[in-house]
Length: 417
Image (cartoon, rainbow, N blue to C red; front, side):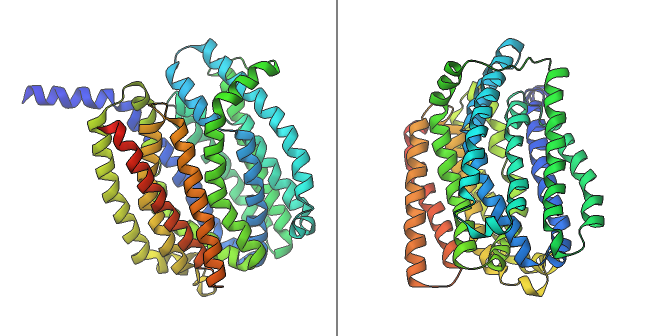
């Protein structure tokens, strides 16, 4: 009995950081999701579905630039920091190189963003909304969430997000009164995020005692080369998610985009509680790969995924009524179809984050994304040819996720034998 108690104590102590990291990473997701859900009913009724859809469309375009500026450095940076958590010199060097590289990519993105505004008429009509949303790309530079994940201090990120999101709430409810306030809403959202990023950057310099400086281009090129698989992975993954928003916004309407966005929010409710399980485990797994533990995690995540799908099916309609009212009921079946991606996501993120990446099988990750991307857009084209119903898009997304799951399961078997 004494031995068992001692074992439990040692297990708790050895996994304390993992538990803490998971808690604060999940808290961060809960915070972001709760914040969005809190203001959603007010915004959809004040701005209207059409103009709210415009904001979603502009944010979707900006997400492409955020991915480009990130260039896969986040996952690569987490790995480097997790391998050297106590070396201030090494951490400062990693941050300086990634910071400098992202600054260069930001300059390129500004030029491209202006050119993109000529492609979509809606962005020219709401040009300043688009520009304000684009300012969020600076978060990728000055708020290195990946660093805090690597040193397992996600509580810092959670505290910063909480404080500045709470500060933005009075401005939203007091200042946003009519559809014409869409630009003001974008300014409030972006300003609160940038202030949080500024504080996070100062925190790195003062409390983490890191020295961040610009480095020669030759050093950035090395990191770009090392991060390219992560970039291709992130870009294709982002394309899978965000391109559907672009298709809906251009082929259907901004109101339909608002319906799809609400469905995504419904699915995010169970997803936010479980999505960071694998990310929290990553620092420990990368330093000590354990096959029996990985198999146990996969079995557990299959059960959790099934329960998540059932949660959306049973409570989805109630959530939509509360958040959007009767005019948004079209979101329900979109949410039900998308819920199957939760089942797939948990396992695919485990295969990628806890099996392939720790074993440096980055090329398989890229191949997986190419397969998934190709499958998704093949299904989207077929769906749009066979039906004009918007449900063809989430159905294609869910089927592609299941194809991706089957591929990763087959590839990972070679490592888990």
